[in-house]
Length: 222
Image (cartoon, rainbow, N blue to C red; front, side, top):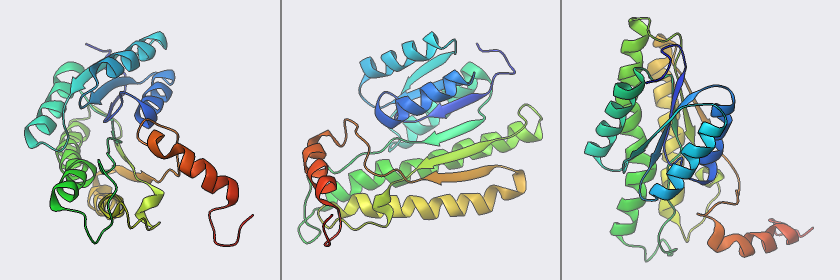
């Protein structure tokens, strides 16, 4: 168990990439971390070790946020272990397993991406926000926040991965909705839209984007 006064952040998809970076930054500021991962237990354990090296506490929890039972279990584990949650970072996300034109992409890919990138964050936020409201009303925490990690794909069209773009655009509206709804409780809700970040998810297209960036990303070349 952590010190009851230590702030706790639940970061989804924190085993690697952006999520790991967020977890380590929070750990450096003294936060305790719930490190969620879907499948790579080794990466999550490595993140937890790095958090510990910064003098912070970490709990790793396997959960597929696209699954209702997993989301509930994740929130429950966080509360049971630390007794509080001050910050939710909806970072977990996935790209389509195969890039396909929107004229041919199937429902299976669409449903999978939307489940992880939009449905999961929506209902996890719903669950955690209700917990935060109770904790605030009981004065167990002083403030609460939600941060959604979106993408420039929310407004930059990529017809060969349309389901991803739609999921990130939806996350933007989800942010606005929860910000409106939770304002009366003093819970701030934010969205961050990173550009092209070098992570495992983007590694398969790294060379493509290196070339595009080098030449300029507009029809009028550099």
